[in-house]
Amino acid sequence: MEKEVAVAIDDLTVAYNYKPVLWDIDLAIPKGVLMAIVGPNGAGKSTLIKSILGIIKPIAGSVTVFGKPYTKQRKKVAYVPQKGSVDWDFPTTALDVVLMGTYGSLGWIKRPGKTQKKAALEALEKVGMLPFKNRQISQLSGGQQQRIFLARALVQNAEIYFMDEPFQGVDATTEKAIINILKALRKAGKTVVVVHHDLQTVPEYFDWVTFLNVKKIATGPVKDIFNNENLIKTYGINYQVSIQE
Amino acid sequence: MIDLVDYIEQIFSDYTFRTISIGTAVLGAVCGMLGCFAVLRKQSLLGDAISHAALPGIAIAFLITGAKDNSTLLLGALISGLLGAYWIKSITAKTHLKSDTALGLILSLFFGVGMLLLTFIQKQPNANQAGLDKYLFGQAATLLEKDIWLMIFVTVICLLVLLLFWKEFKLLLFDADYTKTLGFNIKLLDVLITSFIVIAIILGLQTVGVVLMSALLLAPAAAARQWTNSLGVMVVIAGVFGALSGVLGTGISAMQSNLSTGPVIVLVASVIVLISFVFSPSRGLLFKEIRFRKNRNDIKLHKTLAFMYDIAKSHENISHPHTIKILNNFQGYTKKSLYKLEQEGLIKIDGANWYLTEEGFYKAKNLYNQNVSLDD
Image (tube, rainbow over all chains, first blue to last red; front, side, top):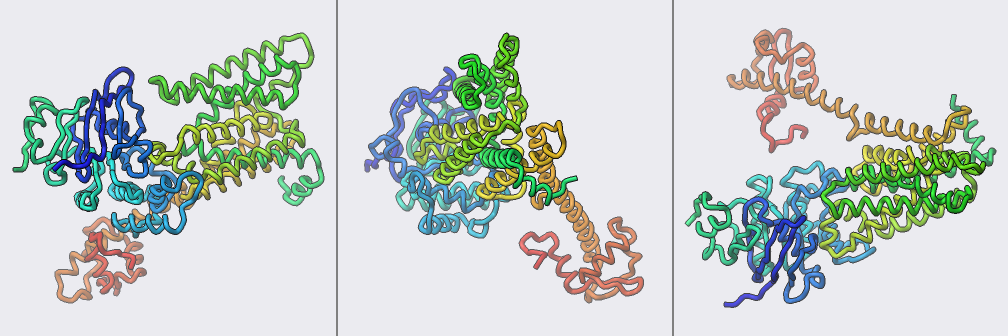
């Protein structure tokens, strides 16, 4: 069965100061998959997400979302940045951060009202953070901050979710909670793309995987392509990993 | 000494004094509010660089027009300040250099050129050049009513823009990348906020001067952050602190001859920062120390209680009395700590004996169980 393509990337090339970070990436992400992007440090995983979202300007290449340029489809795309990318001592509350997820659909100047607040509270409930809604964000643990970021993306009510290392530095309980939400998103027909580090959990969590190391090594269903051959191609010859059969 | 009634009377009677007080208050308020944005964007030094970058603009404006008209000079300052800010942003965006390096470069380059031009102007034969150096440290006494109106006008515009784009500015301050993905033009927002910071600085040059201007921008904001965890409240408090610094600074310097207003305003702002850093209930050093000590004492008590629990649990009856001497082996106990435990109703002391109360037994049992709140 041929799946509808959610995100199509053609010839994407990104460089920082002449050094290529991503080289000529062609990638089609099918609709409705829960996809991991794996690769060693410096492979360009975060950069790939950031250039899809227009945060980083690529040297060449194009990105389309459901057949149209990304800039016309922003409302269908949600983003969870790395937790460390913001200052958590910023003077604001958990609820306020989640409300930021509604700003895109509100557009310029309009303020969030009752509808937005209700959506934000629901998202907080989904990630189990409702009791912390009025907490100053610096008073939250790392796992709780990650959940807040996830809730902020959920409130965007998008079709495609990009997440940059959502499992980084969270405990087992939070990891379980997050993966359950991701699986629920996939069940609802959403497309979820996750930069992921823990190779052990790839077969358990994801149904689609992309191997990346500056160039795209391979992409496809986990059961077909998540094997030693591709791991060695991506991580180098000495890399050994035990893959759950 | 400061006599408040006298002081207020003076404000309302003396025209010049009233003008200067209102001017410095409005200036302090607008700088305080905008300073919050500089501080939260981690661009605290941007203000310093911009104010120093304004100096050559003043000098060049004087060289071109040959007049000491305040508006013309400030226009020159504005252009060169904006140019400096733009260069800093370009250097950071287009080279390997980090923002602190870019700030340092532009600050010293512009200030150097400015000083060079000032010395050049002072060697000029005509008599008109005297007093240009007031822009180095400011001279509030030269504030005129039309300067005040300009300040009020700018403050009102600034407030309106802040209110209008409040949501967008907040988002940009917290998470710029995310703001971009939501489709907001962050360049436009950045230009807006930076321009307002530049304008506020230029307005302050006449009063506080190039060298100290950034303090008026940062001090109220840094102090305000200590008192609140809400951005809106922080901006309001910073505005109030700024205005207060302006009025008090003007008042203090007026009471003593030969006290420059600008430095006194900055000193008042610094005192507010100092007070805020020590006495703020949630973030202040004083209450942090108090909380630390209280925690330490609580933990000591808990240790004693845990020790008692270990002894008591070997008996069927928890109210079985034990001699106090048995605790001697344990370092954490003093007469005071026993008294404190009894006061809290956790133990009972009966002569030379003690026994755990039911409450004490329950508390000790769950001491290290995080799922039971001990305060209930």
